Length: 488
Image (cartoon, rainbow, N blue to C red):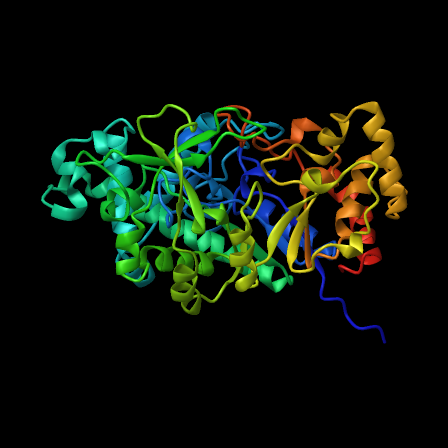
């Protein structure tokens, strides 16, 4: 009998991209169908993006909280099944290829409020409402709505300082606060049901934990001491990355910088709590922007670009030696970009799986033995921040396309479209885990791109499936490739 391969495969398919009938992916039947399709292909991992409340630009990487969930992902179908809705709402533009976040919010809101009105609190709900972050987030988002969604550091003093003083009379907002608690309670229940079904099918869920949090978040409002802020609550320094080949002015993300000295003094409790909660939601937690644990780019808040700044050493080994013994979920990391050797030394010291993206490492015309690549890593054709593999290949010059085909042929990837060959090429790598975006299985062009770093607004984060039919047509070939590369 041949020894069973320890190599596995997964599919990257964000929740918001699922073809639910209400304009955005959710935790209803579409999520269960996606889990069944992914597991049926032989893949063992379903990678998603952060589930937190979407902040500026509808980005899941600028969330209003590290703990709360995005109410848009609540399934109206599930609420109907629980008899919290009198009737099943009619579909919202079922075939919409893009997510119109504001329109979908407006459509779903009356149904969510109806479900709240019909909900009868029980002991489980009351216990959930006592969790520290739950009440804080409900108050935060309620006051944020009261203030026209402005950032908390622009609120009246008594509201701005509620986490420390709690002197504000909240009685006028009790009903809205209770509604926000209900949304989070239902979010956790619905997501746990999706995860349980995925686990039952043999799937592990990989979720993302953004390195930074947004200034306009519960994390900063209720924990100002953990960040470098001035007396008014504005950042004194912000995060980003310096200029490089792709961006002459760098990327100024605007997130506040951590007060690492204070965090270390209390045993990194802010991070321990975040990671432990992420471990409840996911089986595998991907740490975004891992290099910042080693060194991070610190930009003066007054600088409009990322040109001005300095590299500052992070907590590195002190951090992971303190935090890792307290965690249960597997940790993997994003280690892409221009890194100094110390970043890889930190990664390898803890045997974290890093990332390899074919679009960054494939050189047309250069012969490469896929089996010679690193084993303790995750290989991707591309991520949510890249072009689709078909879009990337289409951007190559005619000469490079010919050279690419030659390289793929030499690597044993000889049948199907260029996109299918690149998927096969990624699966053939030695990496312990290969993850393929659903768009690359579907062989989509740049119309399937999810996000373009350094840009804001539409069409970022808006791509979604119009149905599962085309994915079901393509998955048998993907499943065959998994078997051929011993990943199934």
